[in-house]
Length: 249
Image (cartoon, rainbow, N blue to C red):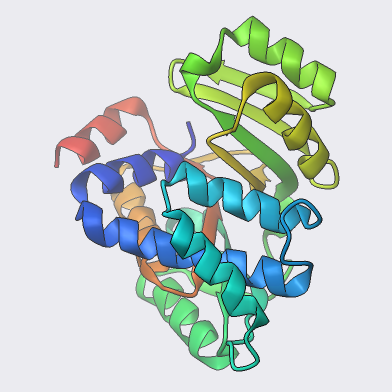
């Protein structure tokens, strides 16, 4: 498992659950509002909105909160959010891709730059590191949805590109363009997924030692904690031994 995924699991256990949940709901609601504003407010006719609602359901977001986020898109006085991608290097030269939805570009750019600078990294231009990643679709299912063979058969039938199964669950990868269609086909076979989204998947992972891992994790935590930041992707990995040390710390 890549470092960011491991780190997110650690932070979820260590962090204040209610605060994390509230922040997650706010970010999911922002994505729902943007998706509804960019297309029709009907998830059946708007694939991005449908995926956003699926992810909100996976986090147990109440239906009334989802409905409010959709209605907010129709309000004339609602905020207008811009989608921005930031790219840069963190401790140890690891590549970082940051996706944000913001109503104030200057505020967000300044904040993101400060996180990189404080970590000993540097924010670069758009395209500085994204060439090290593939922009693909990711569909996650819990392990109990079925065996690896069952999920593989369903994924092949749905037109997915790759499947990785483990005790933790099933990760199904698709092209960015076919994500919505594959997710819909899989839902008919396997039920509602745990998560459906486009991700930046690193082509290669960079091993880092314990000291650099701590620095990278602090950078990711600062970025994740920013209200405007929706997603953070990196290409670092740490050994199981180091991860166990950091988990016990």
